Length: 112
Length: 113
Image 1 (spheres, rainbow over the protein chains, first blue to last red):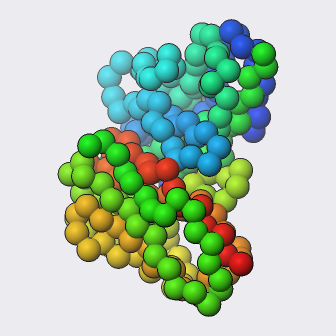
Image 2 (cartoon, each protein chain N blue to C red; image 1 turned 120 degrees about the vertical axis):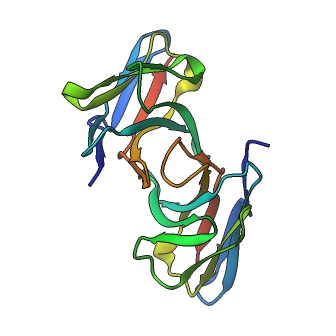
């Protein structure tokens, strides 16, 4: 069965600093991988997704993620964090006819 | 139209009430989903509808009853809920079941008193 692990429950970074959020997955075949962001009391917004092809994926709001099959990882990165990036970030895995399963989430705090 | 619309945004109901949550999309998506999200937790899948037929029921208690009257609408009927059912209920849709990323609604914040 597919599963996702986000090792970091909470991360604090300073505004303008770089960010990397970790995600490890378990899946029997080539997975579909996603990163979502959720602001308090809101729904989830898709940041980016990986299905196949180029392992470096560009998303919205300046985010990118890199698929590394050898490490079963799909880490999310941003070169310079803005205060508005403070939110909960969820990594998710799915596949053809398999439904999306979410990691536990990483809460990002941005210091001024 | 690239949105999933959920109503109401907030709902407070007693344990003997019957209420319904509604979800609507006009993107031509043929899969729709209900998720339940407790505070500081990830969304948990409840139900999946694919081509208006119930595809997955994740062993959800019968006090939650889903309905998909057409390809654009998804309802969740609530009856005799418990306080522990208080949560954010999220609806999502996708072009087909499982793939391509889901579009989520903003959710209904449900409080059971």
